Length: 43
Image 1 (tube, rainbow, N blue to C red):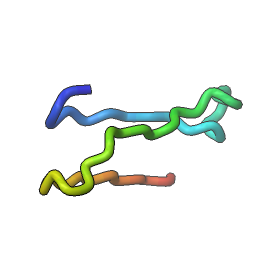
Image 2 (image 1 turned 30 degrees about the horizontal axis):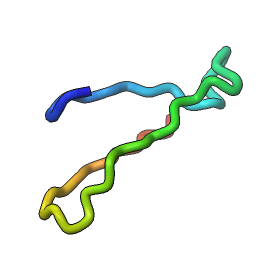
Image 3 (image 1 turned 45 degrees about the vertical axis):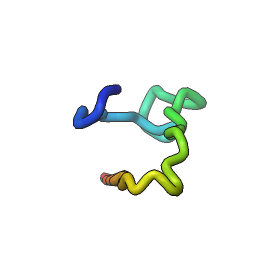
């Protein structure tokens, strides 16, 4: 995904998605002055 993009990611407990959940892995940003937002919505 590129900067500014929004992704909809289904987790492992989503119906019919057993053991196929997405793992969030972003490059480290410590010391770069950048910020990151991770918004999780469980419904």
